[in-house]
Image 1 (cartoon, helix red, strand yellow):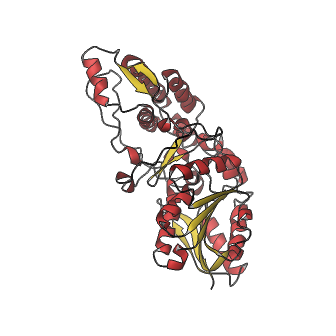
Image 2: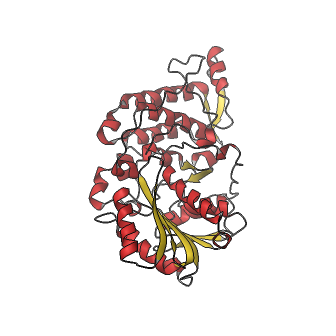
Image 3: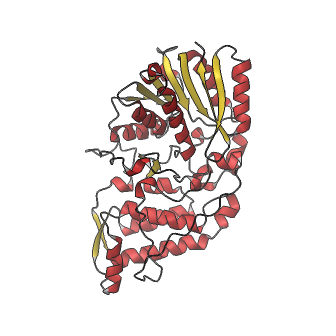
Length: 400
């Protein structure tokens, strides 16, 4: 995945605090040059999950907050927690200096071992963590406190300082994904809650929503129909599709994982789309029984990593993200082939499908499979590239 440097909803970019606590903020270092893409490294590389497109978030209103707490299965993300904790500027600066030093000690060791984050990226993540935990904080307050030699100014936080020490140690020492640390990921114009047990949505998966937008803009019947997001995870694709459908159509989001169902339901409620999206627990097409041949669109970002390749993934991915959402069987094709067969029976005539794959070889295999093993079922079957120019998606239509 091509590295990016900004979280879209935080284009204000909380400045770093210099290690010597000077009163002038410094600029974030430029992102490291992207490594040459390879299908395996590109597929699920969590440290590269950074938005390159944030135009839509500039005008998007903040999502509504739930009046009640989320299900007990879902820890409340940092940015949604009430600012009930307090600390002094000096205590926060002490933590920040320690965290920055820990990030600097990494150097390029993670990058060299498994294409993990280097110190520059970890420092950017440290700033994003500050954004999420600080409540209504003006960065200049920090500098004024230092300039006036008044380090005991009290500020409000969404987590106490001891928790911040623990979270940052997990990030560095355990290679726990940053998205799990803060409990959210920025995706399109959304801020999606995530946690262990749920795949972190990747930027290239946004393309699926764009593809659906192109299709429904040309076909009113598809726009008004039922869409299915199979293996929804955090609910990212389902929510993205529901938003572009507007007042038309509906979406069913399915997943086998009870944790994913909890997380997706929470995200759907945060965006007030519970009347638009049905979140249903079940394996792939099982929740669609009764609507065979009536589905307007079927989309999925399924597991597609070959089983033997899981151990070679970046530590953030292989150690922490759910194997259920990664492992696609011996060749990585088990679930993709199941979805192809399902699309042939579930889609209405003229219905659209879009599947994400591990790269060119899987794309070519799927196209050949649809044309030769499911003859007459589909038309206009194509492959499309992701942001890095890698063949990533297979799309097409059910024959009329």
